[in-house]
Length: 406
Image (cartoon, rainbow, N blue to C red; front, side, top):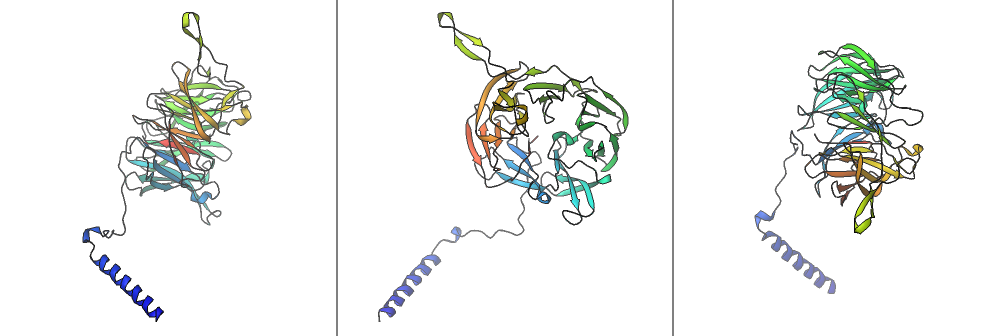
């Protein structure tokens, strides 16, 4: 009898709930989403967006480039591109296209090798072109900014090859064809020059210039005098470029500028990174400047992508305390902000966790992204150094480069 009463009470509750549900207004019901449902991105990305290059070091067939909005508090991931086998990435400024250089094997991790340059539409992220690179020889290395660059007029792409012979494949992006290969013996990378052609760094401590004609064919090559002692104080080959000048930190704590604006790469005069000047009390309560100790032997540049810049032309460099040159790619917990015109360190930003990769957006309110070792990253107000948020969720696994949207 008790069991019947319990069943009756249960049926009464269910009936009441059903009546209540039927009485809800129709507009409270969620609309049916169409399938497939594909979003589009703008042709001109906001300046708060960045591209994060993740070669997926533990499963390199599945590398990717993630497009992320780091200025937003939610919904950071906007899209992604595939990037197989130590792939490289570049973006165009003069047309709505994105580019990757990848390697594929017919059996996944083995078999016949094919290297390709793939062209994507920025809005749909759909493939709109593919150019097979000859010789199966493009450098398969962790992301180096100089290993894949667009020419100053963005007509050509330069792809660094290493077999271990060094060369650069010139690709005509307008006509979607290979122009040819150019040998750069003993040198590496290809940074575009404003006067046409590209610059490469060589084992003798000099920079080589390769001159090209309007069709991308070799005219001549030249080499500067050696400007660095690569045995004593080599430079990192991952610079930030401001108004055509590349700023290259050295293992020993210097900044080496190289001007890429003309027909030749021209090394400038290097300077030593110094801590911010401190103030000490002077006569009558005034303050006067007291220079800080040299960065050499105490604070040194350290990281993989250890440098960035903002819209005002300031340098942001990862600096490691009590470092030695052997710590050059370890990472750091501070970012020093330097004015390259005065060579003065104007402020220091303390990070939440150690980072080996940073990038700064180019918007009116620049954001500093500092990537932690677990793949998450912290976002700071780059001007004040204030921590804003941490973005996690394993959006990336092993990031090695990041580029602000242009």
